[in-house]
Image (cartoon, rainbow, N blue to C red):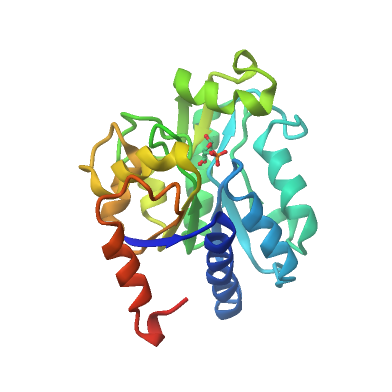
Length: 256
Ligand code: GLP
């Protein structure tokens, strides 16, 4: 794992944006895994500002709420089009988001996995982290080998996400999420976490044991995982000086 700690979320975001921009410039037809939530919003704004060419980019989103139609204001379809895709020259047919209103959810999850494979796999998967250590919507005790499927949200996550819905009682109980195993097959993972309320989850992910009760901890097994933090999210890490030293002393060829 590479731990990049910056004083602010803005600074961490702009390094992450440069990394994604570089991938888009180096590979003409990259496949990106995308995330929702408040954390990546600034990153999306910055990527829009960079005016990159998205015509040959394919995207797969991590998750969606079951029962929310694409035009529902709290659906992740709506979130992604409003905050990101409508500002890019991306082709609609290249955008993939799990179907929360599929009649046969299991079949549509299997199709999603096939589509990822047919696209050649995900080059870079963007991730946030839940306060309980979830990635995508893989809640604690999710199988670390899981594939795209339906999941039940924990009361904690429904409470956390209630702010977008005007009350946790309006948050759906079920979601579709890429599995932990699906995420782990991405060639590169880039996780962003900002703010004090993520500090415990971040410390457990980076320095705790690998365990299904903390799904993000599996990223310790990923050969190319980069974790971008602001100072508050990093505040509970034990080896913080070491992570700073590693980043500051990088040889030029390794710099982002
Ligand atoms: C949701 C999403 C996750 C995201 C998490 C954190 O549950 N499914 O992908 O990482 O929330 O959200 P936020 O960035 O708003 O803290």
